[in-house]
Image (cartoon, rainbow over all chains, first blue to last red):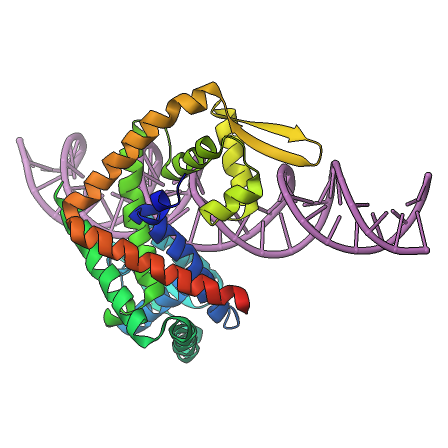
Length: 145
Length: 145
DNA sequence: TCTGTTAATTTGTATGTACAAACAAATAAC
DNA sequence: GTTATTTGTTTGTACATACAAATTAACAGA
């Protein structure tokens, strides 16, 4: 296989990027005891104070079942709790969860620094921006079909 | 969480893209009975005719253990076989594997068409190119540390 | 020839994520 | 007021992928 087949393929290339950047992110977050995705979920809950799984799924662009799994873990670790209110289920931060906010922000800054050190500020910004545009285009039309 | 936190994050954005594009790719490949990654592995083996797991890992930018798992599956389905030669282990296509080549190429073309239809040719090319550059930068420096 | 070292591969296990089915609660239809 | 429908959530299960440990085979040094 001439390797152009791979490098010209958006599927292959973006999965490869995702593996590499996830590994970097995990290293940054490790010392704070979070996985990067859990951290973003915590940020979302801390900001809203009270949010349903479905809303979290929309914010994080994941399926509700995935959200359930993450919330389970974070409840287990004492960062979140669930509250049932009639038909509604809400996810809220515990005290410990609110207190973790500063650490999470620090870890995110850390991760940014790590990849900006390798890419430079301009490249980091523009590739992120371009990926964001692309995924929006793909999702908008996907949902119409 | 203001959603800029998410959209400005290369980790989050590229994982999101990876989920979306993988889903599209799976749809294109489904009718041919392959998952997209298995298909690329088949392409690599068909081209080399005889290749070690380590080489496959390098070509596909995955770990050897992941390659073992994929080869197991494709052997199980009758597309590949393993050959032990003294200390070396080679992966080769079976007859069935060689015959699948045309289908795989067709599926890849299909997948390309699908995302180019949503992105346009220029955007598809340039985002792929830019991601490729980025991942190369990240990996080059990663390996030095 | 035995022993220690190195390199390649596989295995055990874990994580992230999704789909489809099951479940629960609220609401609508009669 | 019971039954059917819709909507949100969770559960069972499955797949892609990785890490660390175990295995295997060749090789080097004594």
